[in-house]
Image (cartoon, rainbow, N blue to C red; front, side, top):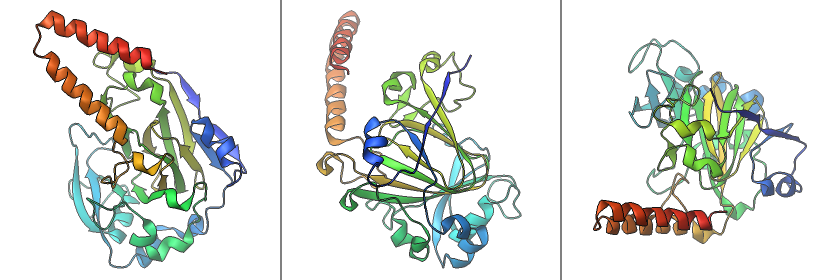
Length: 310
């Protein structure tokens, strides 16, 4: 038995004037087709990116299996020239490798200072910035980051959520994206911003019995497609082919709600983080009580949260 799959909505001829009303305010993922994303669709071949990247080193995930597992850390971080990342990710068997000849690669661009600066491809990869047209669906002052993503065929990224609205622009290759709504968070067995259900197609329902209740939305992105992923929607991505994509994030809420020390855009909003801290301290206080009292008052806390739930 598996989750019931729903298709992600598809929209055509979306522009700056109708994006908010037609897509963003509905707070559901949507595939945008027929968008003009620039010359990158034809220019961003392995040869073009390799020949024009310049002397740019970067950190890449390397895994001997296609399914990356953040719990067991079944991957390595290695530094390679960008041209080498592109070349290795584009083939399924390697003459040079870290683990074995069939290892998988996943690259996510980072800021100049990975601890304090968000990725911006116009700064890290200025030679490619004129090739891509990013839809101006948000005020420029709300822009947070643009992220280069390159994946070996078959590479699967774990289920997680982001705290900002974003566009996943698929430049080359095909990609399956599975999404779960924020309202189903209790069924996803969270560890921070990630789901502990690492295999969503063959889940261990003995260990994660409630996962079956999570509503599952799916789409396959073709080259040139754009997926709008609203903040807090969980997503799991598989590169069906060698793929090149650009992710664009923006602050869709008041800027003061976001953590300024968050270069990845995945730290919970300040009021939410503060609330979780208060909750953790409250639970620690309950430890002073006998077991049956702890259980009773913890249930009262759950009931209060349910009462406030929308």
